[in-house]
Length: 545
Image (cartoon, rainbow, N blue to C red; front, side, top):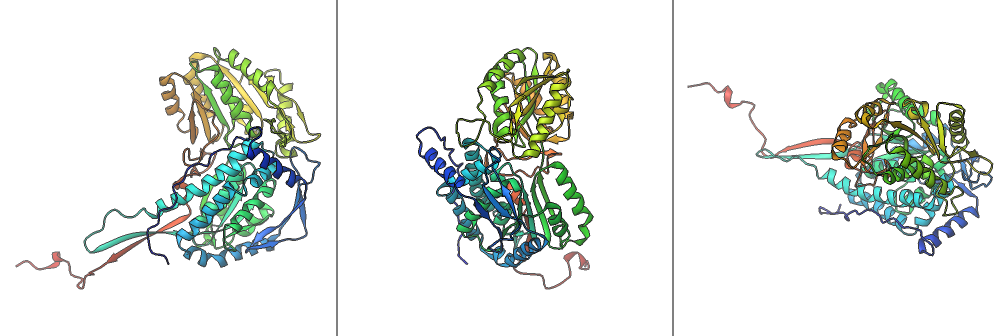
């Protein structure tokens, strides 16, 4: 093993490219999009470093162009789940014994591959498979994933540096931050390529082995992530990527004695069911599993009477409609004072009318399609129900069309009841509900915000009044794990705003920080005594003379 206390490269947030007209990145992205659309990929699973094809395939079609076949992927069965577990456990000894700086080098190389030769490819895959525009793909699939990899290496070294500050005379105290015993199951969502890559990579970086099941709608870009990891030198079996039925996989994994933890992003209902199953099987495990999950959100924007109307309108449009509102942090309920509402409404209607909606290949489109037909149908029903309800008003949008793709217009619903269904239920789409309150009810409205629904992920207050900001920051301290002042409630940046919420929104283990990586190690205290005692007798046992 190499000798030395090594310093890793200082992480800096990856610069966001702007994809302006005639820019190099725009040209490279268009080329990558054209290349991807010109072929139909045959996507394998990756088990023990091998590409696995079963012959049982499912289709991948762009959400904004569901008549175009982009790829097929090979579906696995129970045998592939067991093979992935066996491969992970077989790789465990060599991987966890590899010096930490060698593990770090793999993920630092992966970051550089994504920043360079794979940047256009990962962005194009995210755009086509998940219907993200160029900017949303850039800040997710390229920049955020790169940041996760680089900053997590730094956090890993900071964890290893955490040692007892005091050593007694003749004693050396040490703490080893061991990988978990067994394997970790990563279940990842469709909406963020970076989250998918990070949920597997952050666990593996700390010396663990992983079975990774992505959402079907994210498999197209997950395949690129796995290609990057392999090119970066990730040994076979450390991360095993499988496309299998969730309940079937869970029935095997959650009964396995070597199950050591789950890293999850998805729905609250699924996470709660997983937690219940783990509890029922707790007697079967060698260790208590680590359960880490980020789930849903019903994220709020609270405007104070002192706020600038244009700031409020911009925060709402960006926060609610970027990536079609399919961010767990997306603004989906807003509370606007009556004195400010007429101007905010005017600005929102003006700007929403200017939003272009269509396929991702046209970079002028701000809005693209929602992820699939199931999401489309759910959102369309909420919108149609609102149209039929005489107590609410659609003030912008309201149209939807699935002819070519799963397109839902950015929609704003104004309600008279702060507990109207779309103020409470997580919709996960481009639908924003607004409740207008009397200016003197600012304190009361914060109580309503705090008590509405089960979630506590993100929220923001917009105000120029410092007393109002201070009051909201305190009163809403448990209503959001990420709280924004004079900004939209989305766009957390690794190394700047660690992300996660509590209550029904998850375990708040803060992706993008050291806190998350600490969940994937198990500390061992080592005490070494240099001149140990040779007589059991303590001085107090001596007889007085």
